[in-house]
Length: 237
Ligand code: NAD
Ligand code: ZN
Image 1: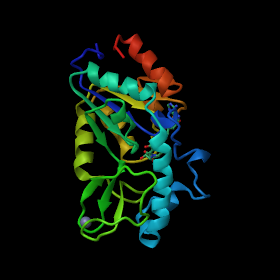
Image 2 (image 1 turned 90 degrees about the vertical axis):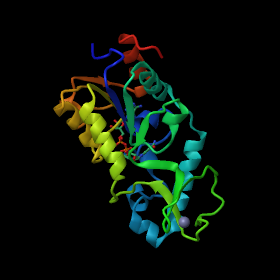
Image 3 (image 1 turned 90 degrees about the horizontal axis):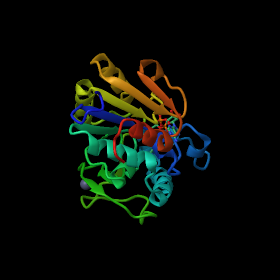
Image 4 (image 1 turned 180 degrees about the horizontal axis):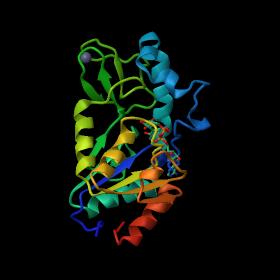
């Protein structure tokens, strides 16, 4: 019954859903660049000190992402959206692959790597050049542009957060896919849903701190497990 079309549904995704598209998660060795750990560069102090190095790191990541295409996991998430009349995708990913797979109703908790934000006037613009033309890009107002990404030590957009928690509290079914359940506040969304009585299903290669909350935990890659789950519940892909 929980898979009926009118069930309010949320899918929460993390870096794991993009792993099969060749985009490294942060926790594996593959997330390293020139011996920098992501935490060392993706923070406001590093950008204030050395914006060029931070932009070089983003340019490297944008180069990897530009070559990537959505995988069967992204496609399955887009199919879940088509199946349910009341659906929200909440993603921690910044790569834009969910949109490329056809997801429309989505909240990006951590921003988007294809957008810049002006550190002076706050203007947000799309920017797709790979490689970047300028490693200290400027806004038309003269201000320095930064990636439109929520960095370590920064707060999420209050509106995006409010909407995400409202969706989590209202949903009856939540799929939690490819997230380690460590990064807050995203990791609290399943708890909010659980407390409100939702059915929770996890899809992850490994056990996570969220596993004990789950009604069902499916081990394996999102690209294989999600399509199987949808077939089992007669959701067309
Ligand atoms: P994360 O905390 O979401 O952890 C990745 C999780 O995915 C792990 O639990 C791992 O077991 C699981 N996993 C790995 N491969 C999988 C697969 N094929 N199928 C299913 N599960 C799989 O992500 P993180 O890498 O620790 O990054 C933390 C934050 O950094 C993210 O929330 C995001 O904001 C940002 N980030 C984004 C991207 C992206 O946009 N693709 C990539 C790396 C990091
Ligand atoms: Zn500006």
